[in-house]
Length: 289
Image (cartoon, rainbow, N blue to C red; front, top):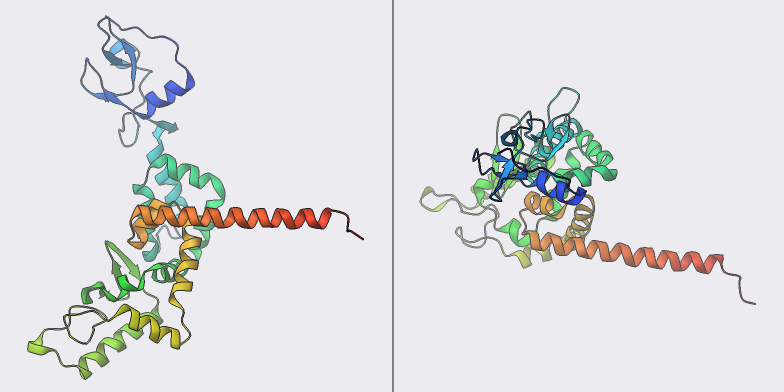
């Protein structure tokens, strides 16, 4: 039996093409387009309609074609590569974690995000990748920073990195030199007991304890560095410009935390727009005498 194929609405078509399932006849994941006499669902090729096959010609994903025979995931990956690549076809090292996080997110979420004015933002990041490095460091909670292990600071032949969770963040030359100097001075001032270095990058009073976050915040404030203000501003900008799930992966935060930041950013913009609209009405209304 060939299976029964009939008309289908746009909503059902979208749901079907985005959610392939095993065909009852060939037991292969496909977009199911018909029902056999016993009600089991079949794919296009098994019903004698090879043209009803939504398999991606590049990666073989069995559905969700978007353009030129490729699925949404492949199309999004191509567009991201084009936005992130520099003129020589490479991607800046500090942007690689962001690129990976975007590719790992839901393709339709990223595709809709790219349709906004995001392309200009990514082009700016590709041209000035150090902006993201500073933003990542500014967004870290101070407690997270003081609990970084000493192994989080790494160097290769050319660059220095700070590993945040699974993501290595390229440090600009000036902060990297400061970390090198700090580690060298600390080693000279506090000889390691039994030859073992401290566990934490920012050691506390004892080698196996991290520095106190509150004490560090107080010291930074005395030097004119207000960490909470910088972090809050960075987080509001980040969740406004990027999906919250990407910000969570990039900054080592939970998705629920970045979702709350996104809600706060949206609320702040709504309040601003409402106040701005009120000011515009006041300006346009006749002045009372």
